[in-house]
Every structure is written in C-alpha cells, then in structure tokens.
Length: 138
Image (cartoon, rainbow, N blue to C red; front, top):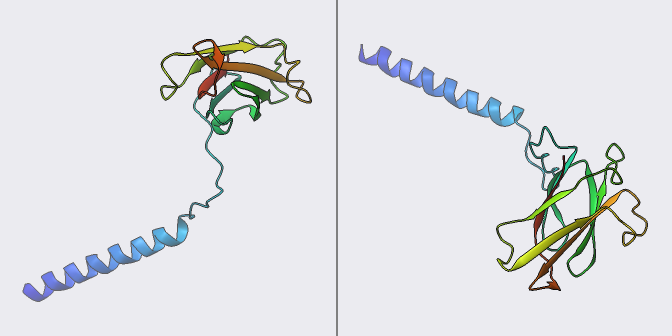
C-alpha cells in the first residue's frame, strides 16, 4: 500500500508539473508595449481616462489627446464619432486637486489640425492647471 501511495503521489506531481510547463508554453508573455485594454463602456460612443500630462490611461474611440497649453486638452475622437454633434461629459479624477474645475467645449478652434476634437479645460482656483480627468461621449 505504501509503494502504491508513493507511486500515485509521484504520478500526480509529474502530471501537475507537466501541466504547469504546458501552461507556461501556451500562455503568451505580456509585452512591455502591450496595448491597454479598452474600458468597459457599452453605452458610450467614446470614453477616455486622461492623465494630467495628457497621456491616455485607457480609452474607447479616442485616437489621441494633445495637451496644447496648461489645463487645455484636445481630445481627438475616432471618425465613427462626431465631435460636432457630441454632448461631452467630463469629470475630474480623484487624484485631482479638490479645488479644481473642469469644462468641455465642442468648439475645437483651439485644436488646430484636429477637426474632430473635444476641448477639455481644467483649472484650479480660477486659473488653468493640469489635472487628470475622465471624458465620456454618450
């Protein structure tokens, strides 16, 4: 009984080890430049999580964000979404200063070269300031 118990334990260990090796071979390694997954926003035409420096943490139908000045961001939308017909909603992220404010504008005249953009302004105490934000186009 002891020998069969040891054989069973050895067999289970060998199967487990081979399973781990197989899993390691079949699971793709994450590349350093792997794309960030899209946010789950099924009812939004476009959405983005933007850092204060203008980099995108994740997005849906947002092709780029350009920080054109302190507290002024041009959010370029995918061609499937019309900025001219959009009703953008923006809110500051929790890491923003508590005295901050945020505004959006579909007049993208400040976004030269980006005709399908929404302009987002962030500020603090009435003055322009770089702040992180969320933007959604319902």
